[in-house]
Length: 119
Image 1: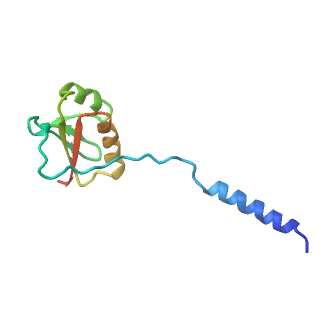
Image 2 (image 1 turned 90 degrees about the vertical axis):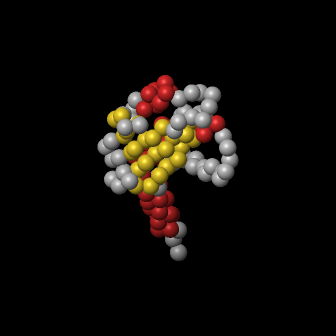
Image 3 (image 1 turned 90 degrees about the horizontal axis):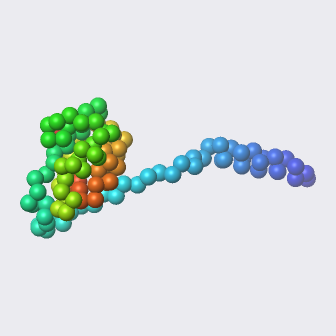
């Protein structure tokens, strides 16, 4: 029995699995819950209210773009106190759009983000 066809099949399978696999690294976003009844500095700071839609983003009623959001929020947030940020989702928002917003908000160290359901 010849081994040559077996080697050909192994190379074909190797080529198939190499071409069909993905080599991209998936990013992770850490989500955490707050403890009930825990008193923090967040009670003394007024929360920011973000409403996220598929093509829109408003901060306390003012329209913003996702690109300039970090710079705008950095000017509004006190760096020493915990800043609560409430994110309300519209019905048309996608998971990718929410992920993009959470990545921007993660760069603010004192932000504590709460995500609400659709409005």
